[in-house]
Every structure is written in C-alpha cells, then in structure tokens.
Length: 222
Ligand SMILES: [Zn+2]
Image 1: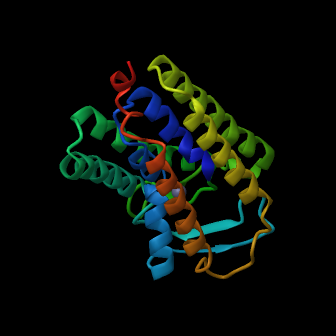
Image 2 (image 1 turned 90 degrees about the vertical axis):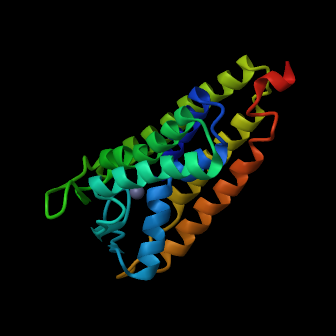
C-alpha cells in the first residue's frame, strides 16, 4: 500500500475539517516515515526481490514501526503530540491518532505476512500484493471514494472543491508512477528509504497549502 494510505487522510478531513490537512497527510504515513528513517539507519531491515508480484519488498525486520504494539504506540503518541503541541481539540487529536493507526490496518490488507502481532509472536498479512491488479484497484478506489467525501464536505461548507480534486489527482499520479517504476534489485533498502522519505515529506508540504486559514473555518466564507 502506497498512496492508498492517504485515503484515510482524505476521509478524516471530511469527517473532521478542523484537523490541519498536513497532520492527516503526515499521520497516514507516519509509520512509514519512521520506517524509512530506521531503514536508512539500519535499525530495521528489508530487501527487494523484483520477482515478487505487486511489491518487491521483503520486509524481514521492522518491530519498531510495523508491529501491532508499535503501530498502537505511534498512534497514541501522535494524538497526544497533536493535542499538546498544536493545541488541537481532543476530538481532532483522536482523529489524527486513528489516521496513524489506519496505516497498519491498510498494510495488514496488502502485505505478505511481515507484520508482527506482538514481540516474538506470529507475523500477519493478507497478501493482497499477490494480486497486483486488484491491489492497485483497491488503492486507487479508496482514494477516489475518500476524495469525493472530502470534496463533498468542502462544497457543503461553502468552499470550492478544487483542493480536493487537485490533491486527489496528485495522489493517483504518484500511485501510478510508483507502480510503473521498475523494481530495483538490492540486498538492502538503503536507496529506497531516502526516496520514500522525500515523497512523504513533499506531500506533507503540499498538504500545508491545501489548508489556507479559510479552508478549515467554513464560517469565514459564510
Ligand atoms: Zn507501512
């Protein structure tokens, strides 16, 4: 799952427009932002095997980001930080925490069994990556549905829908480009980590501009 994770951010924005868009966009990939950094640092490990269907990733060791306890911890800490540092209402902080946790649930759907349930426990994953066409359709379908919810919310609030349409288009383009890129063969993911991190950070910065001060206060346009 790549851009499909952002469906949770779009849906959350529709449900809780007070949440700053960048917190939802960063939150949807927070676990992977941590993973990219730990892969670069050699703390978590993986490799790539282009002969695999769907995704070449072979994720051998990622207990600090993609185990169930770790994902829960990242979600709770993200919600608490959002509340403490950004002084957001409790409901908004809870929504941000849920978006962070959505990452693990979406990964559960697509990953081959590499998600640790608990320390020394079984690894789980429903392996939708093994059906690449279905997996791509699910990711883009989720993005489309969530994007429409967000666009509808903006229209109801008296705002124009173009930021939703533009960001949705960007995410679908990123997803298609990523799917068409040839898989690299490597024993480690040291070059994958920085590339992934750069994409996550660029999309987070783009999200800042989706959220002008008027965008999150619908009454300002009334
Ligand atoms: Zn992930």
